[in-house]
Image (cartoon, rainbow, N blue to C red; front, side):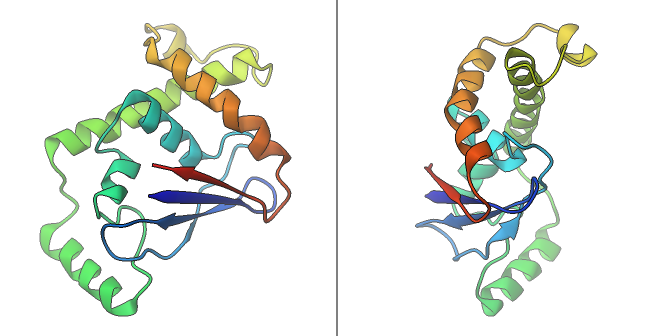
Length: 162
């Protein structure tokens, strides 16, 4: 699966997912908010480095639509019916993987910011707990992409393969 992050003005961005399994997905806007580490890029790198199989990107690769909608209107209607019939429930493992992705992202971003002089100190929720060893590897992955993202012109893209 290929995921294309396209930079917009300010800290906005778009995401397009091109996958082999499941309906073709329409691109969507990302939540923005960080000039070096877009939220969805963070989750991609966290999940890839930590081996999280049922986070956002593993589920997309397996055919789940996640936060995306099918590009085809007929497929979109089917997906909406499925969501209504089964509700928002996912397996306990998928829930645990999503929680782990959020937890690691919430630790790794502030660690990266402090190491690169974008923040003075770690937030209390990070300093009170033990930082998992995988965070150093995740922060190294952030190092590979943060400056590349920051220096992209509006309309420029990064493509990552899952």
